[in-house]
Length: 371
Image (cartoon, rainbow, N blue to C red; front, top):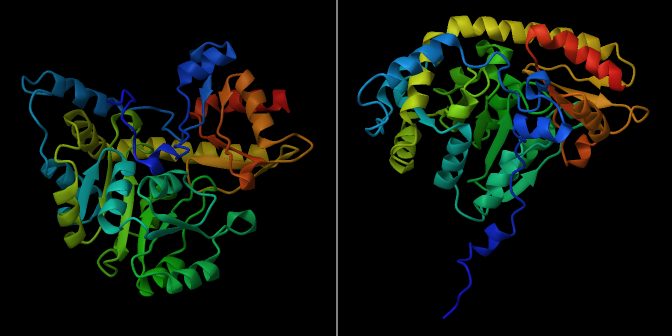
């Protein structure tokens, strides 16, 4: 009889895993600092946090006798109706998940068999190669050009030559470079017959008018991913959603975990939609802070910020200043936590999420102090 522990499937045991951000308390402890004096700018969260109306809705829900003791609605009826009001998309074309990550994984598992391919344009969100590894999919990478511009011609050519079941995954605005996918390129890709998953996790910061949602009725092979984590400040509750043709949504609802949205997340999501106008004021403040920080970085010797349509800025670091990792470490020592990457194409960059408006001066002062 073997006394070895159970073994995971061989391809899973060899995976490098996804590199998540370290919690604030741990980063502060490592730096020997008070968490309250630190600026957590490494995960693109809403720096204003959960809106008071969302918090009030959760507190009211907790007072209900059955809250948390009964299963949530597997069909997500109330949430999907609220999302329909927010997006202008029919509820039959919406499904929610425990973050957009769950729905990305679900969609890839539902649409692709092991050995199929996804196509991406790095540098981009690290979850895509992670999910390709997890689901035994081939990863076709078409690197971005100088300045991280999308290689439109190469992407279109590769998509036209790819197998019929290949899925192209693009992020708009892109993480970490911050630019939108042009409507013209998206239309050309979809017109070629390829399936496109468009990750719009940060679309609120570009303006909802920049969303591709109006193309859903024209192109049934378009799938849009969205999240509440960024704009609504409820990343810890894990709530995202997908927009797609009704037939695909029907199938995804069949194969998703039945009770994948917990009651707290559903209450918070509906409340956030009801407070979308007020949260929009926070988004306006974040965008103004982004523009002010961009101007400050642009005038700082040794730094080259990229224009961004999101709630973060990717900053190039000149060799005279050091590598992106070196600047990251110097900032961490003074309580400013930013994001760096193992991708060689990003070795001379770091990404800074937006602070609150009242924290901007402190960020700039601490940045100047370590340069």
